[in-house]
Length: 108
Image (tube, rainbow, N blue to C red):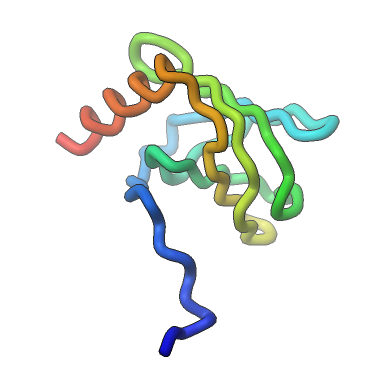
């Protein structure tokens, strides 16, 4: 028996970030610069007061040590007035490696 109100299990853990990390994201006709609250290999939570609807496809770019990570993502959940959880749908190998290095560094 399962609880249908339980959030789905994450494939990758996410870590909370200091307030300094920012992401540029593009969706439909939008381009915004927002803060990142949590980050993991599978996606991130973006702080934005009026998030786009679930299912919206986005292009993301954020700075990490030694470069910028570029990814495609999809909005998986929204918290009105607070932000949105997005899942990476396309992440090139070089971007994945940069992200892995950042997460390892933050976890030490």
